[in-house]
Length: 472
Figure 1 (cartoon, helix red, strand yellow):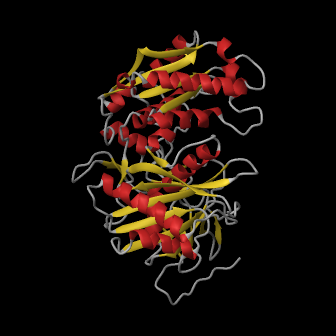
Figure 2 (cartoon, one colour; figure 1 turned 90 degrees about the horizontal axis):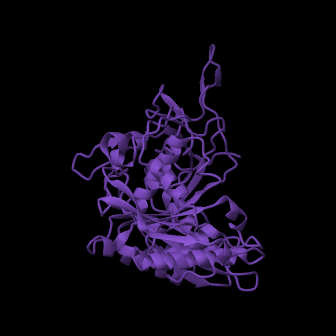
Figure 3 (cartoon, helix red, strand yellow; figure 1 turned 120 degrees about the vertical axis):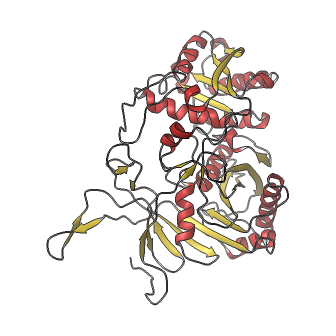
């Protein structure tokens, strides 16, 4: 494999981008940190929950309510780290961290009786229906809670998937609750209640609960000075072999990574299901809906610049549909294909004896950018991060695994590839369903793919816009 690089051009063949900073308030000189958990400890969240507390409704198997309440009580207590010691700080307890109480609402609870579920091939469907009824019941007292927490007991682990493996309990419950505007947190007895690393677990759970309740843990410092919107596209294949059809899922983020609603748009059948795509008219429709959503959340204004990510190949008609919807009101538009699986790998080298080079003891640095051509590059989202470790200088989130890069290609737009690369790197730090330094993809990709996965596994989810926190 060779590089298509012309040394006469002004771009550099290789560079290392700095670790993106996160912001923890909205002031003109915000508090910042590169480490998300340290930033929360030092500065608190970007925005607390709207109700000044996080009120929890609960669903359990009959008799398991005390077990779930005891687990949730652990989130209000301090825990010392026992894994990833170079990264995980002490967890101080939910209220100390977010200046908001975590409050299970005893009156907002539903028991599921084992007799409602039974056994047999249709037990998964009966459990799904029982949980849907419980969610609908809690929806009648929606003003009394912020998030529904459901404990899946060990006895129901075999029912997580339908008998044919096509339907997933988690995804069906998310879709059911999303239609009602109800955020859900599923707790599995066999994993969460038995997880040995309590500090890490409660960090992860607390950030997710804050976000699902309407709070914002942190946002990213703007990678560029321009007012930029980021949009992720993914395609879901729904239905059986005789009636497969495609749904396009999109989500818009503002210049600081604030997430707006998802948009689901059914575009019909007759597609290349190995590489789904939209016609020019369909892409124009999806983009027009996204533009209206952005304007609705931004007092009618549009961004100066738009960056769109998707994992599949951009076709000319799709690019034309984007420009039909956003141009000329948005003067700067970039369409990027972001490929997660690549045949590339790499090692970091350091000087040896004489003119020789030897492999560094640390993997390739996170933020390493290698040009393949004037419009395509490799980017190490995973890799050795500097300046975030609690002990020492370097932190390798992948531990012993050799980090591999993603590849991205610009199919519309212009300028140095360092700009879209720095944006991808920053957007990789905004997965609020995790406590890690970064996710392996930007949230433009991971969030839209999450919606696409849920859509592909549920019988129906109407064309509409949905708050992203409903699918976390």
